[in-house]
Image (cartoon, rainbow, N blue to C red; front, side, top):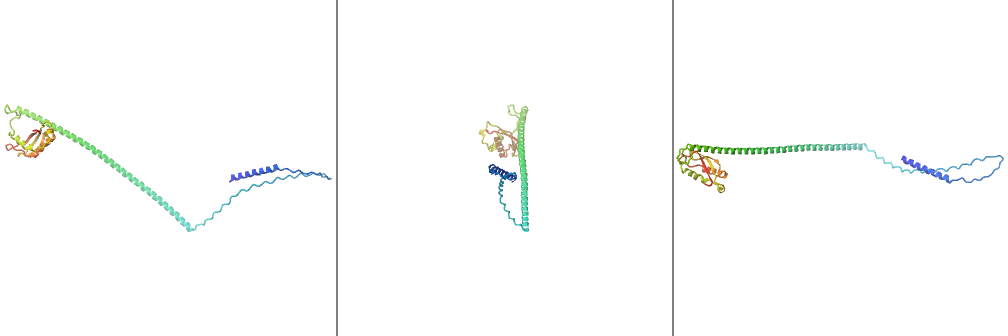
Length: 287
């Protein structure tokens, strides 16, 4: 407003000066009329009156904006209304505080639930790790047990082979000793120190007793005619107490068939009312 008033005043002043200069430039003094006056006493004429300058044109008054209407004064609230307003404000504050408290409680519950979920996940991960560790330990133990069983089996086989070798060596030594100390006839083909053993038909009776109990259908698929030597322990009345393979034929099916046949036989015939406590029977699939 100050700057606008100054600009407006300057513009009016320039307008007044322009008007004044224009009036003075176009005005001139009209021609006067001279007359001579004779008198007894000379007098000096007074100077002519100067033409007064024209009055300046007053600047136009600025247009004043219409006055703003005064707002109506609102009616003053009563004391009861003020109290009601204060109560409403307090209620609104309380409601807002309740909302804030509820929101804070909800966030705390969410944080607590999140902690519980994290703990549950951590426990689940620990359980999975424990299961994986137990699984690895079980696999390691199973592998160790398998290796141990394999080693024990190899040791057992080596021991059996050693026992067979030792038994064969002992038998050979006995035969050699029997041949050295033999008492048979010069033309005898025996290897024992003296002639002894079952009667001539006893072997046939044993064969007739055991052979019908042998069940073996793959004899045609066997290469050669391998022998299976079975040690049989007997009671005095001929009942079979035990049987075991002491020299395998190399065909497990044939060995098992022989053992089953002896087990089915249950009792061997007597030879002159007696029977040896231990016998070694030889079985060949193609005999």
